[in-house]
Length: 168
Image (cartoon, rainbow, N blue to C red; front, top):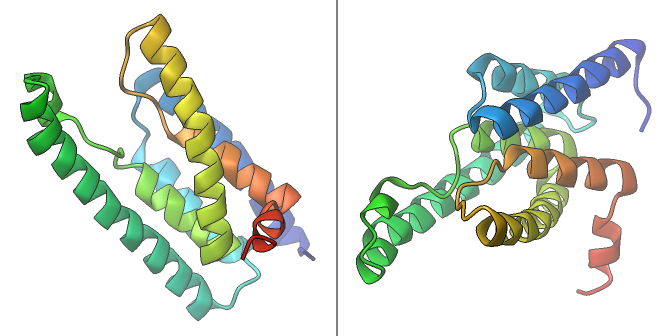
C-alpha cells in the first residue's frame, strides 16, 4: 500500500488511538465516544478503497454485527438466564457499544472479507483469555476492543486472509 504523508501521519494517529482505546477498555470496560468517532472518520482517509466501497464495507460489517449482537444478547438474557436461573444474565450484552463503530472502521480500511478474518482471529484469542479469566478470577465480562485491535493489526500487517483463501 502506498500512503501519502497525510495518510501516514493519520494512520500513525489511528494506531495510537487504537492503543488508547484498548487501554481504556481493559481498565474501564468502556471507551469514550470521541475516540471511536476519530477512528471511524480517520479510517475513511486512510483506506485505499473508493468511498462507496468503503461505506458499503462499513455498513455490511457493522450491520452484521448489530444483528449478531441482538441475537446473542437475546439468547443470553432470555434463554440462558432462565435455563441457569441466573438473574444477573438478564442485563448482560454480547458486545459493548464501542465494538460496532470500531468494527466499522476496520471494514472501511480492510474491506468486508479481511475484516471478517480479523474479527475471527480476535475471537479466537479472546476465547482463550475468557477461559483464563473464568478459571482464575471467575469473571465473565471481558474487554473485546484489545482483541479486535490485535486481530486488525494481524490482518493489516500480515494479511492472514491469504492463508484462509486456500481453503475455499
